[in-house]
Length: 341
Image 1 (tube, rainbow, N blue to C red):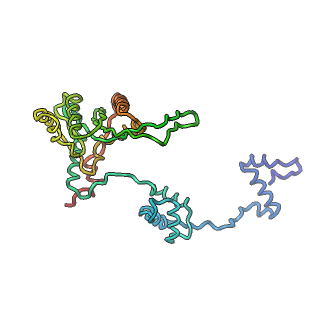
Image 2 (tube, one colour; image 1 turned 60 degrees about the vertical axis):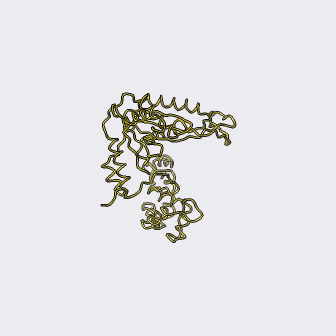
């Protein structure tokens, strides 16, 4: 106020200069001058009392707990999933609070890392199953064996991919415009995928076939043993227990002498039912579908060529899988799966 006063020694400072000198805004200086003129010196020197009391906290821990429990329950009849607005309306209906905004609900869900609008498909293992944990521990022990080229650990899995052709040629992308594809498409059948991966060596092989019968699996086994692992004494093969994945398929495909020769070079370890997550080939299949097959491919030959290029590039970079989960971890984190003795 002294700086703003004209005084006997010269004109007063302008408000902007006073604000800059004191590190406040010009609006603050104007408010202070107005209070001094209207209410006097004492009012200008004292902080203005709050006109409103502090806002009462409406949504305490009890409210959050009830809201979280509601979000983790099934959605109301007629609805597929909870939304923040549906949760807000239901909270008022159940008298959690007299009113609540959907933004408040959203903040509470975000703070607790809760996403009731999402769901994920997962292989849910049976609880208290001796058969499951026996197969699981067998696989985990195999995964933590040291690398041995005479006894390589190879994981095998199968999947499929629909062959889809375009009805109209896609329009290429350009600056400010993504690639545009017509909604209409043509189905050309299904291609079957055989995936082999050796996690410790960073090597994989993918075969694209028309079928995946017993004989197709047997042919893949013969090629694996004779072409990709000809010097191995025995291949420790990890795979799921499909009805085609057994030694009998070799005898249905080859002469008994040849079938026996191949069978003696296999040390098979089956993943448990509902335990396909234990098969590292599933990880590699996910990478293949995301990096290579996440598009429309119309012909078998084109898919085989594209997959072969992906396989060559991935093998040249020696992409390994660093499996960390151990039997000791399983006995702590998955104790509910073990039978109670």
